Length: 347
Image (cartoon, rainbow, N blue to C red; front, side, top):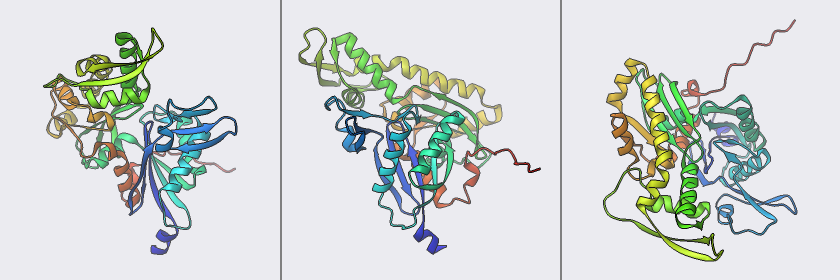
């Protein structure tokens, strides 16, 4: 067995809309980079992925396109995803010489069979001999150290870049779940639209992301936060600087946050009575990048009347859960989401 571990590695991959994370068995988190790729359209070659490509966003000539090959947690550009994943695995610094024996990937809850197949094929083409899928809320709950294998309710809310996954988990399976295409990217779009309408200023996604982190909040906060941003004036076409307050950012994201809270409320209402009682004692756990928004746990707790807290290290909950699966594959195999295939009947 030790020889096999030397020759082959198992890998857990959180292929997210915003960031991709790679965990190597018994070695830990090896890579955390943006899910971004830059391609030269003249030569049809990928020139950068991850952090290098992210720095190029909004700053490239016409023949270089910077794209995000995953939208809503699923593959939208197969070839770009395949090459990006191949480079990420190469950067992960694996020491085994035989390649990747197993790859365990997280997928949003409720994806279609075509979307599942695209993720599997991308991982196989990137170097994984066998590919297993696990639903992202299950991996996140496992990474947050929730008792998902016991007969008690664990409610996890994973607010990522492209999707928000809400799930009640018990006995290693999802009891009630809901997935929204409203998450971090949608909040950025809301901020871009608000700045355009309120200040007549054009800004890009990186500036909106910076504004969300620096001044965003789900509830009113003490003190006043003001952030200076630069963009292009819609009227004159010239560069201009404006000062945006935290109240502006909260007003911009209010509708999307309300949609997330309403979805959590709906999942709580659909939870079986016995598990609902467990939930009251256990509480709601938030993870993903959206869980870092100021006061979001306070907003959810106020609207649901259930104790709400942010999981430890919310950005890496999913990949840490995948890491536990690859480190103890036999023990956690029950959590895998590979559907049973029909039996082949030979005549």
